[in-house]
Image (cartoon, rainbow, N blue to C red; front, side, top):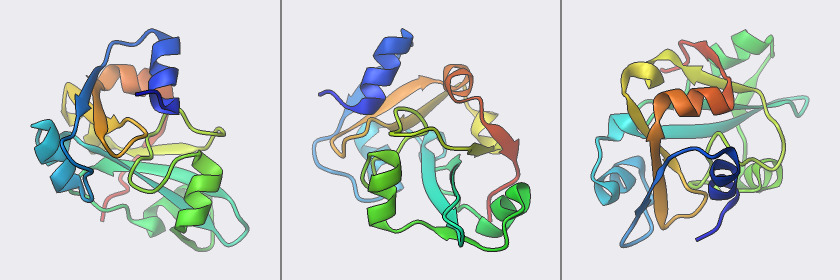
Length: 153
């Protein structure tokens, strides 16, 4: 399996573990079960956009929900909503459900909720619905260099 996410990790020389799925996961809970990890260890990546077309990738623990009003306050935007499927693919190069905060088609502002730091290891999407990636949280944070804020609902 070769995706932009895996390619990025290989190029950076980061240790990770590929966690194959027996079937495509449609929810965070399904993905966590397939990978044998707690949903709280999953990193959910949500692409948000404002009315002018500015995009930001917000990342929260799997069971949590991104609060767009908190994110927009961080960037001084008037209104912010989730990007549609076409925009997600166009901006990230990945389809909804496979977006990770690395291996993106173009650089994006990244904002992580503080609670992502609660676990020593986290799970991100591999860029493919049939596998996830486990890596050390510190490695992910070094690769992403995100802003941090309270962005959960």
